[in-house]
Image 1 (cartoon, rainbow, N blue to C red):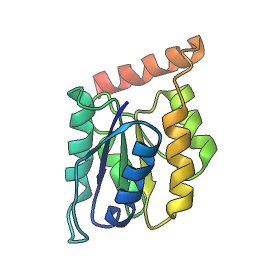
Image 2 (cartoon, one colour):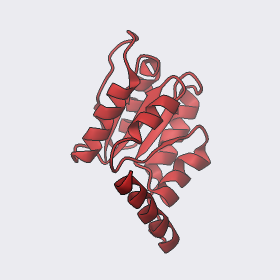
Image 3 (cartoon, rainbow, N blue to C red):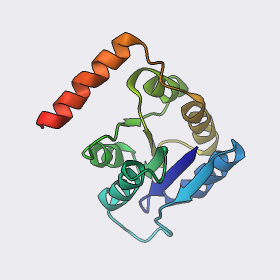
Length: 148
């Protein structure tokens, strides 16, 4: 898979580790910035990552900011983007399996490299189950997105 990876300044220190983890699992990482700890606005990077998925440049994304919350909120404003903030491995795989999440949001100030490794592995290894109950629920989410 092609995995877009983006962060704001707070997520930058963990971003290189995430890119390494993605590559070590046989996926292509697309680095969308930022490239330093100079302050930037997380919505800009959430948009870049979301647009990369919308445009087909990436199948999934991993988005980092300080807490992960702001980045997830911003990404979820984009049509077709389902970002889940996950700081435990169960949520990292279950969000894909049940909710077809395509963006993993991480709080770089909350987790360290070892937990990031586990979360990314769980996220990348998961596939949407396609079970009728989950398909039905996603259709309802799509309708909410459509009507705003």
